[in-house]
Image (cartoon, rainbow, N blue to C red; front, side, top):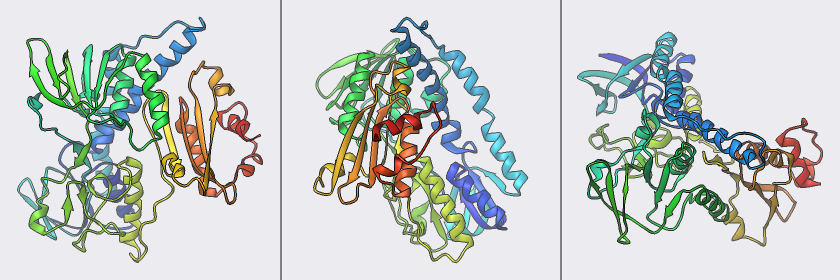
Length: 445
């Protein structure tokens, strides 16, 4: 039996941030992990998506320039790409585990189950702590349809040695758009099945529509307002049947129709902890209804995007909260987010949808950026920027963009939003040339 000041359950980015942060402040800390240290992001998630999207970016960039006979097209190889990525990522879990040990933090392998507010059972061993931080993240939502045992999930896509030639993706969120972008770049036939009429619901509908049009030109097939009814195993593939009566064959079905909090094995019911299908209930101090147990990241039902950036922000807050006076509630910064698609869709601050409902307070300026050097030199056919201004003082309050460099562009504007800059303030800055930031100024002259 071990006794600690704090036990962190979950070793993703949020959990590791809490553990290392409290360790540096003198707390005796342990981290419990049921799978791989580093969590989903490092081992099965966003890190691998970023690396695979690199190949998609290269493929699509050469395609655009090949239209001008400037280069030859690029044809990436999935097996070689995965072997390269495996050399980068297969050591992540061991590296994180060793880093914990080196810092004096005890890594505990196994599934944690609460016995009471101060004790957990991990594989038959009892561990005691004054406080706990739950950072168990989320897992793939499992749809209940006939043949659901034939589903593949996000981790399967990102770790498979071979990529089938015909795939079906169920869902049309951020993960789905990453997978369809990657798969199409590797010359795969892609179908997307979405139960309603909306993709990427958190983003501007007009720009989402343009992104879908671009993907459709590349050969991706979209089926909106169409629910999956069944998956039937054939000799060499699967037969999909949908609510519209349509049916077709596919080599594999990836279910990425959302994620649910990974809390089912913690035995929270025995503690009387409050939680729902959306996650663990926490207050403005990230405290559960049990005063010594806290939670952060995707396992909570906080009203913020379920992104690693927010998990780390919450974890940093908990480090200060648990080691300080504990009186200051969490205060979230201006939101910013981006997709893994090509082109990327990114936004920061107020959304276009909200601004459109308050036209007496805000105005929206839409800018075609295809003539900017940053986009013209790579033959980009779509590069759009939308800027939201407050009518009262011309202050920039929101930005969204669809372009191959939208993530970088949005980050520049995120800093402007935090600074409270007006349109005129951007004209006073000299950025390095040539750069995307310098091109931004063209929109304000």
